Image 1 (cartoon, rainbow, N blue to C red):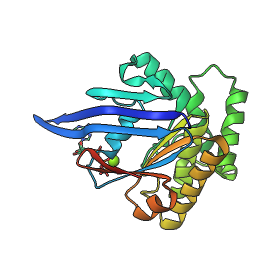
Image 2: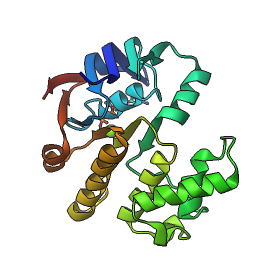
Image 3: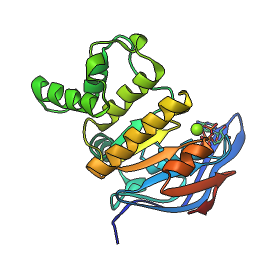
Length: 228
Ligand SMILES: Nc1ncnc2c1ncn2[C@@H]1O[C@H](COP(=O)(O)OP(=O)(O)OP(=O)(O)O)[C@@H](O)[C@H]1O
Ligand SMILES: [Mg+2]
């Protein structure tokens, strides 16, 4: 039996906006094993991003517990959470979040700047990550000089430079045409195979979920309605 990498136990999370309470997660229970590729699907506003944020320690549940790699992160201090995020977790956001003033290589390196590594070590790792996503030849380009698919691959290189145990990707193919979307998904699956990285992907795309989701989690109105 593989280890459990992520576990949610009776998780509830409300968002409050202008006096209105939105129940974004309702009694969510979930287990994702080490080395799995899990896909979270569901209609807009059903709570997918909220679930990703809570599973990754970017946000806290109101009640219930979240375990990441065996540690109860719903009780962790802000300092511990920031260490966990820096060491164990990688993120790929839908809108890339790249910095235009930096080159592709510098964008990838930025994640390691707070670490006590030499600049040579940081560069070595950045170039290895850019090689993994097949973008070495674009390392000196600024994000403005890259296509959408290339930007998304820089975002993946940045997310894997510290060799995270878990990679979270929120609609990573949302802004890509089907061909670039498939090649990005192939890349994520390769990382899963090569490095045993656990991968959790949010997608609206039924075809992508079918093709790539070894575990498929469906949500509706804040609840998990099926896992298979
Ligand atoms: N910071 C916030 N403050 C207030 N309400 C929020 C906040 N974040 C999310 N919500 C609300 O919580 C609900 C769930 O949002 P969430 O972003 O998790 O949905 P989603 O499934 O990711 O949707 P989408 O597919 O459109 O990205 C929505 O009704 C949303 O408006
Ligand atoms: Mg979302």
